[in-house]
Image (cartoon, rainbow, N blue to C red; front, side):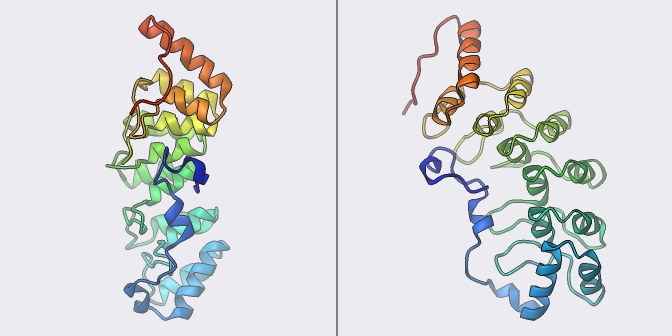
Length: 237
């Protein structure tokens, strides 16, 4: 998810580097020929699962990365190539914890792109952890407002106030997405609206920043009810 440059200092670090790519091919690219890498990347993008399977059957690793350092499984997730995703999740030798160059994982991408059945398979069948240090799958589900995925992750033990590297919490991402039901879910599960990220912004500040007026009003009313005082307002340094 590429955030508007205006807000990168507030909610920094989420997805942008991975999607944009680095522009520099790492050394491991030479493990396969350029044409082989191009072929499996193209097949993953266009959900040509037969071609992906054929290339893997001929000896390509299911953990092959494209020239940007993106695992082929995550390329398929990014392009909503569901047949390819489902094949790769279950193929022998797949590393379901393999990260891209910005430390994003398949479960994070499945959460970001709304692949609920695949999220369930990764967690329930493949035992991929729902919590990790830094940005989490719950942050990523909330970024695009995926209510059902967020609920599933929470049901499986996701930390509701997990801090990102800059201490942004999932509810801040849900507010940015503008999903009121998701914000309510996180509040019901104990999200703390007093938390501020490293830029000093609280959930209420994020609602104001992203022009989420209805959410902002609701959070201010909640603050008044919980703490018996009006929200003091503004980012804190």
